[in-house]
Structure formats: structure tokens, C-alpha cells
Amino acid sequence: MAAGAAKSLAFFLLFINLVMYGIVSIIAGWALQYGINHTYEKASTLVMPAHLFPIYFPIGNMATGFFVMFSLIAGLVGIATSISGINSILQWNAPNLLSAATTSIITWSLTLLAMGLACKEINIGDRGSNLRALETFTFILSGTQLVCMGAIHAGVKDVIH
Picture (cartoon, rainbow, N blue to C red):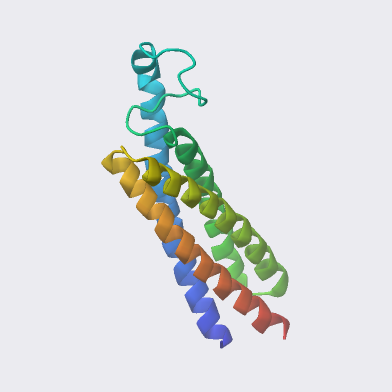
């Protein structure tokens, strides 16, 4: 892959990922706030122990708490990775690209963890439309982050050789 093509593809994907990770963070933050606000009134009628997670999510199922928390973590790490990755792509030298490659692997692994929890939530069923949107963005981000990671690694290979 030519250096210009890898740079252009990585920059474009990092920008798209920045926007999508921002949307994931907003939806996951809303779901967490909604769960916190409605925990007392909804969980007060449940027999103890209600479940393992301390926040009761009335909009989802038993996997929702873990899915929302890991989506929020993946979203925030993804935003930080995308911003630092864009800066590294603009500088386009070996140390910065190696840093961007490392952080992209970490972000991808967190996104895959959130995607696995989304699969579990889908398997259990009974979830709202906002959670479906969060699941969809998580699935899309796992693919785009993989392609972005490949483009950054191709850029590292071009710069080093």
C-alpha cells in the first residue's frame, strides 16, 4: 500500500471512528443515567438478591449493565485513541505511528469485549430501541476499528522500510 493511500485511509477512518465513538459514549452515558435514575423505584419491588449489577436497568435485561458499562469505557477510550491517532497520522513518523498502532489495538480489544456483551444481550432478548442502536454502533465500530488498525500498521510498515 502506498504511503499516501495508507495515510488517507487511516485519517478518514480515525475521523469516522471519532464520530461513532462519540455517539456510543452519548448513548451509553444516557443509558447509565437512566438506569441510575430509575434503580430505586424499579428495584424496590424485586426480591433480594435482585441481580449482580448494582444498577437496575429497566430498559434491558440482565446483561444490559455490563454492556452499557463496557460500551462507555470503549467509547471513551475510542475517542481518546481517535484524537491521538489523528495527531499521529498528521505527523507521520515512526514513533507516533507505533503509538497510534498500540492504542488502536487496545481500543479494538475493548470494542470487541463490548460487542461480545452486546451479543449476549441480544441472545437474552427484551431490550429497547436505544440499546439496539448502541449494539449496532458497537458492531460497526468493531469492523471499522479493525480496518483502521490495519491501515495504521500498513503506515508503520511504509515508514519503517
